[in-house]
Image (cartoon, rainbow, N blue to C red; front, side):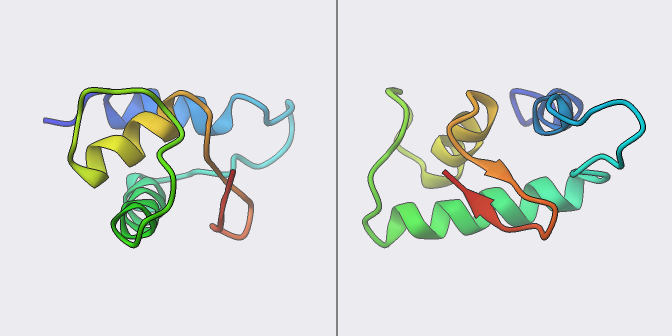
Length: 80
């Protein structure tokens, strides 16, 4: 089970979207793709952006996303 949940991650991803605009993240698939891309970056040696006791790259990527250190753009790219 993923913690935080997909619905929590979708809320975080879309919290800066103004009323009437289309949400950046519409499905869990976008979150899975973005966090897996970030996990690959971490495996390749990128700096971890959050302090955590978790060592698994995917879990670190999810935590970075949840804390707002990384986010998904409208083109499904990752930004820091």
